[in-house]
Amino acid sequence: MRTLLVTGAAGFIGANFVRMLVRRQEPVRLIAVDKLTYAGNLANIQDVIDNHRVIFVKGDICDAELMGRLWDQYAIREVVHFAAESHVDRSILGSGPFIQANVVGTQVLLDTARAKGVDRYLQVSTDEVYGTLPEDRPEIKFTEETPLAPNSPYSASKAAADCLVRSYFHTFKLPVLITRCSNNYGPYQFPEKLIPLFVTNLIEGRQVPLYGDGMNVRDWLYVEDHCEAIWAVLNKGRVGEVYNIGGNNEIPNRKITETILDEMGKKWAESVQYVKDRPGHDRRYAIDATKIKRELGWSPRYRFGEAMKTTIQWYHQNENWWRAIKSGEYLQYYNQQYGQR
Ligand code: NAD
Ligand code: TYD
Image (tube, protein in one colour):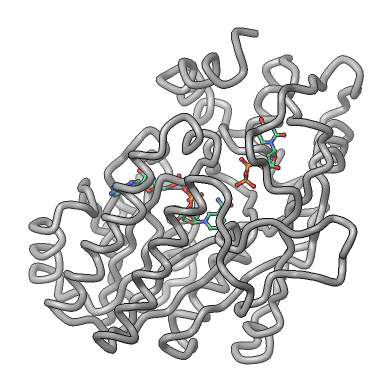
């Protein structure tokens, strides 16, 4: 049976990926490693660990000795690397942890894969490495050839990791693949990101903090579509290649906010608070996903309206999950970021 190392498996997308493979009964043994930072939550995958479908190891990907041991103990031959510090606003407060987890962590995994051997190594990256697009040129989107031009410490650390991955293909012939996806939404997303933050604030009867003029545009993709795309690239992608993943679903933040308010029966005037813009806030992201469609036959299956309803419902039905987060260490961050409200 194939043995797959999934890093960051207790985070938002990693957990959805692991849950999807288990649900579909894919014939793979899953070794899930996660440091359980503030964003990692064992509750996201506890049931599949208890059912002996996933082997969980609490650990840091920067720990070279541990990574080597995992390779030997479980005969790892494939890697899907999700683990990262992932929140732009936190990277503005301090970039150190981003360089450590995203750059050094990737270097340790690459060196371990190189020393111990690997059949496929997939780096989960982001469209944010390409920088920002002009809002008055809708015909321009990010392709795999778009030069890297990261604008936040988060995206700079992800771009640095991508460059390292690329170099291990060219220099050492390591069989790597890189995916660059647009903004995800869905169950288990940490409530510091736009959609779960706004939904949970509204359930709590609080206002939602909209940055700047609220007209920044993101290309939103349901997390399950992202996970399916990663699985397609892992199985069928050409090594050494980059694959963009996106929903062809550009939406300004104001429209996202309206969609959430409508679905939750809330009024704009009493619910939305415009707050100071994020420094260096990228104006627009848009993905051209022609390559993955043409080569691997992937395209998104979920429609935005329906998947948003499912997502909002999930946060309604899982209050214990996010209330535990919002009352913990996160509260301190929230007050620092948005002030006490
Ligand atoms: P997340 O913050 O929810 O999860 C990240 C996970 O990595 C957490 O469980 C955390 O504990 C773990 N982790 C962090 N540092 C670690 C370390 N040193 N060792 C082991 N584990 C560590 O993030 P996410 O939204 O699930 O994103 C997963 C990946 O997908 C990231 O690489 C991110 O850059 C990329 N990505 C995210 C999006 C998005 O919209 N969320 C879009 C495109 C790409
Ligand atoms: P976010 O979910 O942080 O993802 P990213 O910055 O990686 O795209 O933010 C999505 C968009 O929502 C982005 O344009 C910033 C904006 N935003 C707000 O307006 N208010 C908020 O409180 C947050 C967290 C984000």
